[in-house]
Length: 193
Image 1 (cartoon, rainbow, N blue to C red):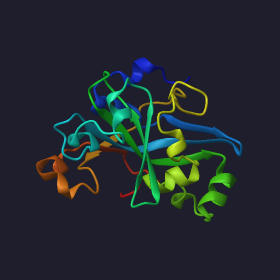
Image 2 (cartoon, helix red, strand yellow):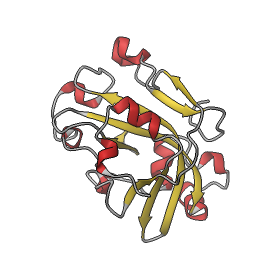
Image 3 (tube, one colour):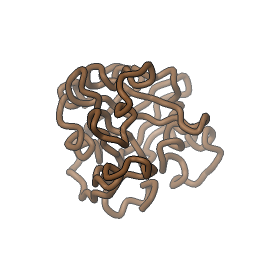
Image 4 (cartoon, rainbow, N blue to C red):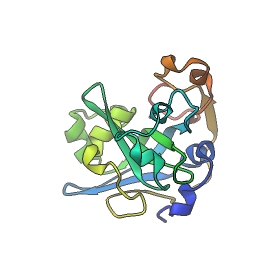
């Protein structure tokens, strides 16, 4: 069952935890690709120095200030894309970064895009994930309740979750220590075990 907008209209840290074990689905000309979400990170409000929104409303962050349930895709290091889903109410900038998924459907297509047969290297990091799923800036603002890029609840039991500090946000002062990176315990497909 595809997640509804109401799901995303919750506190961001709750959404980040609840997304674990759900399935990211991407439909494109190559076919259907999906994977179980095994790692997420929460970014919450203007005060969160690790968040892009901490610098205020800009053309880049405009999506984060919008209503919940839309994709926020951005480019890092001039090459890698990252996929987030906007959460909470409009005008409150918050989103969940999808850090890693365990490949399920469309694996040959992911292997071709990533140029590796190693399943653990297909989507075990935000940049790898976006390359494997063909997610780029053209999907910035995509409706997560639409038909191209969305998340499904396939009715599986809630996984055992581990909380850790977020990755790659050393510039954020005390905010870098927030335990807002969530991963499925002992999963081999997370970005950094």
